[in-house]
Length: 231
Length: 231
DNA sequence: CTGATGTCGATTGTCGACAATCTGAAAATA
DNA sequence: TATTTTCAGATTGTCGACAATCGACATCAG
Image (cartoon, rainbow over the protein chains, first blue to last red):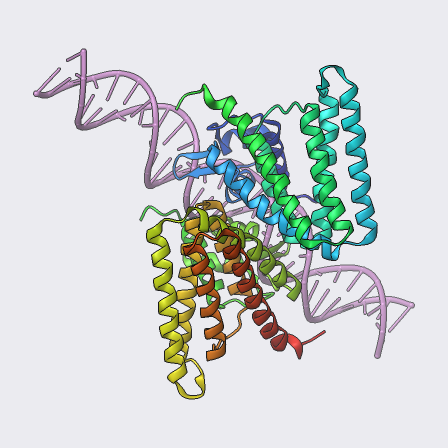
């Protein structure tokens, strides 16, 4: 309730970016936004400034801030960083994670299998939007739980930030099919089993593998999306 | 020359943090700083806000921003992240780095050996401040060159940020002796040789090893420094 | 017709001021 | 004396306004 107006503006603008309401290279005018939100320019400026240092928008002096349009190379960079961080996190989790949370990981894997089975029953082995969303949410939960299990708060925060960026930038209308879901389930299962037997190396290795596959999948989708575009 | 006042203020305050002119839990008053810099509060506020989102200072609403005093656990977290990122970077560098830059790495190693030899000749095998500084600068150059060789700009930026934090926070008056310098030289040499023969795994492994040793060294120093303090 | 130059509008960067809030100490009461 | 209340000072959060600067358009020379 005692939120400062800056935080308020920050959350709203960030949410809009997430929803895809701003297109790449759009200019975020603090004047317009302040009028729209019914507050002064100062808080809006500070909020936008924060988004700028977080890398979601780019600031051109004396011109304005623009929604970033990252290249495929930058997307690849983001995934490389996630691979480094999350694979190390998996290794750390194999050492430190509490038994209770490990079981929780197992339950998430079981849920994934259920969802994949539901997909197999559907026509053409294509997942519905709802099914895809549920699977993605499960995926996210798995990774977050594992990150928390690694016991490194700042690493958790970093990965969340990067994951946010890949979601904003790589606005691919993902439509999972059975093959993808089954493979994803297998990867998570392998990581889970490695953690269960406290195998640090295996957990780290398979997490890296998993993220690399996801990277190739998303980058491929982006290439098809932008392949027939300009440049 | 067309720097905005915000950027100007940001660089100055950041530099002061680096120099250790502010002590942990000090409050950064934008009012005082603006008067001191002879500019208005707005640019100073935005500069401080940026430092806040970067994590160098912490913002308490309606109270002020304070210089962070990270716990030993947080320092350890920073090193864990560096280990994850830089070891992956070393592996990537082994794959992608240009031949010319690899030779440059070798030169830096040679310089380290020279400095270590100079240290051996000094009395008690203790390094002078100048010698220590030169060695540290060399160390930094090595890591930066390797990061650039990995070809991931954002990763480079991230590591620089974290390295800055470890330098600010772990304000240990490092006084290298021969043992430390020799070991550090050996580590860098091992990484260099792995990259030279394009051995991805070895480069990654030894870089992780190197950072873990540095972590233990710094954390030990911090424990001694704060061991006889409060709580 | 093409390119350079000047002008106008719009937007940002910066400023000083005001109100809301917190901190700390002094005063008052039990 | 200890505890609570009050109050004053200082600091932050927010605001509206002004000036510097940039981009676009029109004008004009070649």
